[in-house]
Length: 68
Image (cartoon, rainbow, N blue to C red; front, side, top):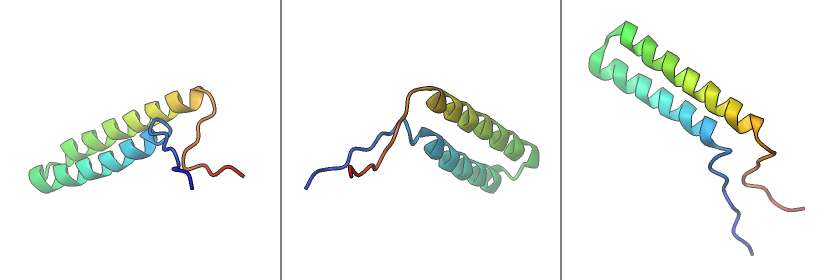
Protein backbone atom coordinates (compact mmCIF):
# COMPACT_ATOMS: atom_id res chain seq x y z
CA UNK A 1 0.00 0.00 0.00
CA UNK A 2 1.34 3.41 -0.91
CA UNK A 3 0.47 6.86 0.31
CA UNK A 4 -1.22 9.12 -2.22
CA UNK A 5 0.49 12.43 -2.74
CA UNK A 6 -1.51 15.62 -2.54
CA UNK A 7 -0.55 18.46 -4.87
CA UNK A 8 -1.67 21.47 -2.85
CA UNK A 9 -0.81 23.87 -5.66
CA UNK A 10 -3.35 22.11 -7.89
CA UNK A 11 -5.94 22.52 -5.13
CA UNK A 12 -5.14 26.20 -4.50
CA UNK A 13 -8.14 27.58 -6.45
CA UNK A 14 -10.49 25.32 -4.45
CA UNK A 15 -8.87 26.44 -1.20
CA UNK A 16 -9.28 30.09 -2.17
CA UNK A 17 -12.92 29.59 -3.17
CA UNK A 18 -13.68 27.96 0.18
CA UNK A 19 -11.81 30.66 2.10
CA UNK A 20 -13.68 33.35 0.18
CA UNK A 21 -17.03 31.80 1.08
CA UNK A 22 -16.11 31.65 4.76
CA UNK A 23 -14.72 35.19 4.75
CA UNK A 24 -17.86 36.56 3.08
CA UNK A 25 -20.09 34.83 5.61
CA UNK A 26 -18.03 36.09 8.56
CA UNK A 27 -17.89 39.62 7.13
CA UNK A 28 -21.65 39.68 6.69
CA UNK A 29 -22.22 38.23 10.15
CA UNK A 30 -19.88 40.57 12.01
CA UNK A 31 -20.22 43.84 10.09
CA UNK A 32 -23.54 43.55 8.19
CA UNK A 33 -22.43 46.08 5.59
CA UNK A 34 -23.63 44.97 2.14
CA UNK A 35 -21.07 47.05 0.27
CA UNK A 36 -18.16 45.60 2.20
CA UNK A 37 -19.53 42.08 1.87
CA UNK A 38 -19.76 42.49 -1.91
CA UNK A 39 -16.23 43.89 -2.02
CA UNK A 40 -14.86 40.92 -0.07
CA UNK A 41 -16.72 38.54 -2.39
CA UNK A 42 -15.39 40.33 -5.46
CA UNK A 43 -11.80 40.34 -4.24
CA UNK A 44 -12.05 36.67 -3.32
CA UNK A 45 -13.46 35.83 -6.74
CA UNK A 46 -10.62 37.72 -8.42
CA UNK A 47 -8.02 35.93 -6.29
CA UNK A 48 -9.61 32.58 -7.08
CA UNK A 49 -9.68 33.34 -10.81
CA UNK A 50 -6.07 34.51 -10.78
CA UNK A 51 -4.92 31.38 -8.94
CA UNK A 52 -6.87 29.18 -11.36
CA UNK A 53 -5.28 30.95 -14.32
CA UNK A 54 -1.79 30.61 -12.87
CA UNK A 55 -2.23 26.95 -11.98
CA UNK A 56 -3.82 26.24 -15.35
CA UNK A 57 -1.03 28.01 -17.26
CA UNK A 58 1.59 25.69 -15.80
CA UNK A 59 2.19 22.09 -16.70
CA UNK A 60 -0.25 19.30 -16.13
CA UNK A 61 -1.01 18.86 -12.45
CA UNK A 62 -2.97 16.25 -10.60
CA UNK A 63 -3.78 15.22 -7.11
CA UNK A 64 -5.30 12.16 -5.48
CA UNK A 65 -4.22 10.24 -8.58
CA UNK A 66 -4.21 6.49 -8.51
CA UNK A 67 -1.83 4.82 -10.89
CA UNK A 68 -3.58 2.36 -13.13
